[in-house]
Image 1: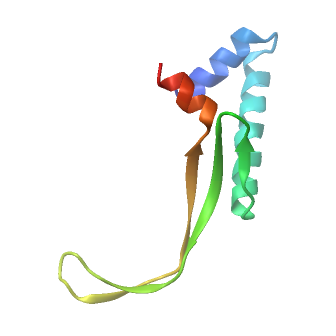
Image 2: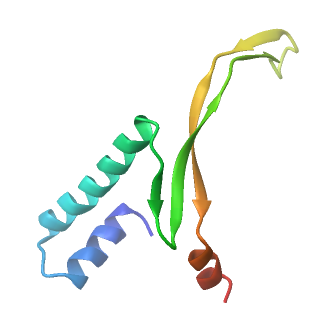
Length: 91
């Protein structure tokens, strides 16, 4: 399922127009993205949680040349599956 499928399903399950359903889905993802950008955790009980992991800078190597390279600090989003989702998928 992609974003367009989600919008279509939301539209069909509610009495919203396509543009209203698009606005709701966009609002949800925009708020989730904004919360993660601030470093907050996003948790949807029973389904999943999203959080940001912070990595410090470190000395690495260029895999092509083998030369030493400095890797800058970074933040990456992570997804953690909820218990109910695991149970529903593992039927």
